Length: 297
Image (cartoon, rainbow, N blue to C red; front, side):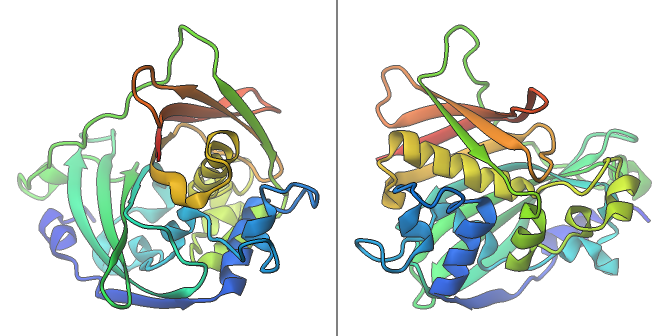
């Protein structure tokens, strides 16, 4: 069954209202591995309510708030969800995320791009994350690669295909990074992270992972996204979550739980606060996150 452009663009996700507590904020940080080193002062404010200044939320916790769930599995979408892969994540923060509160997620499909038969399709989901009073906290764009759904425009009788988003810039190849950050992930990291709402069985069920072409369940792309955000804040932002204003990343290859993530960060010459980044897994020397951009204030 081919996906239907008009149906997906008009799909109503409703307003996802969610109340989260300080315990949820701590679980988010712990699922990423913050607190693995109990003597790391930069991690403590994200996992311990008694830290000086109180508990803080990592900005990237926004990706698990107001989330409509793994909706691509619903029969009406027509999506071959087993072959779905998260391609990119882009977020702009308009104000710091509270450590607890009530939020509303307003989700919509903004782009559907047909790459052709056998080449897949691209879906872009936008989420406006607001406080319960309607104040905008963050604007998120999730770029999803539908590996099994290419050619839908012809299969459905010439349905439209949108123009792609502006491409993310590649990281520098002519100079060494200005900062390097190393973070270990836990073997059970994907099982912990899925408790935050992303229940795609690709991250838990070995049989589903094998069907998708992986040797074992993989870590959520958004978990590695949170890790590079922490790396940026730790290396360049004084571990102050209020300083992160933007973070874009491309998911180049999967991370397996238990691997070590090495984030490389470059300053953008002439543009204070702007950074480019990428990440590799140390054990395999594999580039897993690329075309990264961050902005700090």
